[in-house]
Image: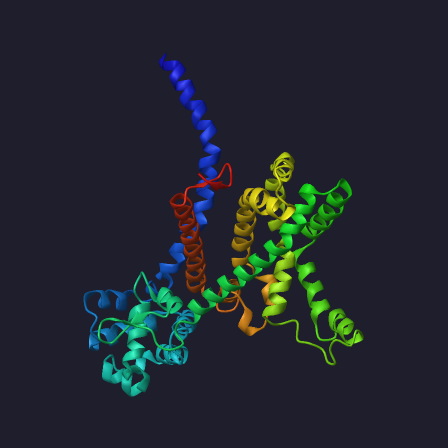
Length: 393
């Protein structure tokens, strides 16, 4: 009995192991992102003396000034440049201040007065505030910059005008994603209905168009829209030829171009789930409704449409989640005021080399998505939504 039980447990472990490995590999990047958002080891390790001094007391005194000079003097020149660059992300002028102070640390008196005499910037409390925050092993500065909520001089928190820029960009990302989702559902529903209820010829034509679009590279489809919508593009030339306009319209590098291109790219992700659900709706139900005296419109609205809502929800949710993380299409077709959060995440990684800010913005997007999924699940439970029938229980 014991041997059989051991064999059963071993077999169960072998079956569970691939799933556990997949979950671990999925969660590992998320944990890594969270660590990058809070980790400040790159800076704190370069200021061992100053970090220990600040951990004992937050007051800026001569001992703190001496510790700063000692760490800067022991730091290689390339590290001073890197530290100055990272400090400069929070306060302009810090890069030159750190580099100059480090290069001439031997000749500076190791006191606050000596530092201030060398450069008046050391007499600014904001300078020391940046240094203090950046020499701690764990930092919240990236979260503060992303949300715009920063510590106030009186000990509370404040948000200065303009500091909520990333919150506004996040809101813009959700608005654009919602617009694209609505358009894909409006365009995709008739196409999915045609595939589910049409003749074999109609099904073949629509499916071929959808799949061809699905199999084409996102970059190719986006570039095609740039060619079509540009000032001298085919669409403007056609409208001028029809005498509908007298001069070209600005159809690209704005919100219109972004939404149109994203809708085209994401349309198959809305159509395919709706087709799968519509295929399961028995045609006999519509026939029974018509035989009982209901017209075609009433039959569609009361019999067919409610049962197809599950496909609409799946397709819309898929498009919305994918749209939130879109980068290439908005970057190529949108203007400066139409870029989404993913653009700034990529910008922090490629140009600013600020992995902390990129991680925080990614976490903000992830938290918002999780909150929406949880809210949807709670609403479905509260209103008794039945997955099997697609209606109220």
